[in-house]
Image (spheres, rainbow, N blue to C red):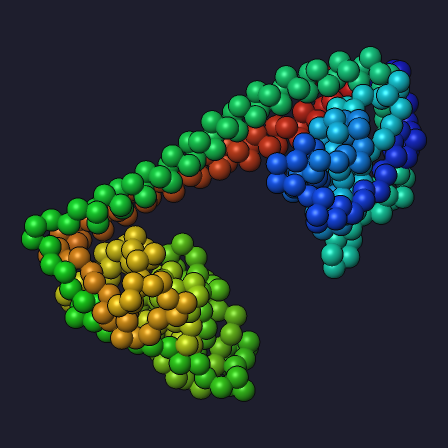
Length: 363
């Protein structure tokens, strides 16, 4: 029931005060008080600017983001902090109210910012203080349960990802006695990329799709092209493994069609001596180990260095068996990830719906 609720402008309920710059020399890693930026604590200091618990609202950058503060804190100049009449309003009620209003949607500009006058002009319905506190108690209880459920879902999501990683690590950590160490150049053809002249680039689909580096990489198959070229320099075929050869060095994806590759990529074409899916998984596992003769990780790597990379090779039948196991485990992992990701999304929606119920007087 909302019989005692009143419609007010948000500016009648609270003030958004400007934060203040804090000189670098006053920032202390182990300082007593938190320093708030637009989206939370970013530093510590031994001085405080405000000595009451409040709500920091992002003013620039992460504009509209809100954070409940400690009792003494320093809000930087990219923030506002909330002041209000404590005899009429409850701090946590205001916090939940601002959360429900989704202030980030008010952000404008190249570097997003919010205008406090626009915030002040929002109409809200407010109950008496006793009802505010009752609502807060209910929200705290509901949100604590949601937070626990999210924590469990996030752990399950992390565990599902680790399941695949653990098996992948185990496969290559202990090669069998019959496995052979081969130079990559012995079992593959390596094609170093070469960039065409810029005047031949287009975004209208003329010529071959052109990829310069790992910008379009996904978890396995390279994404859709955004650039084409009518000057064809070096070509990768569908099914070739593409390796990023300029920082970051080592990430791999599969080509899904015939493409032109620039100097940020190399194509690795498996011969009949190695299964391309097996090689892909091997390279994923050993990405951090792509090093030169000096043992230093490269900011870039050339064709000869790729060809010299050592690959542990069981027989083809064993390679295919490993790939089949990895594919099955990957499918299972992705299914679990989708379940837990959906659970997290559902919990976030539940939180929003509970907030809406609270401010509709339905709790």
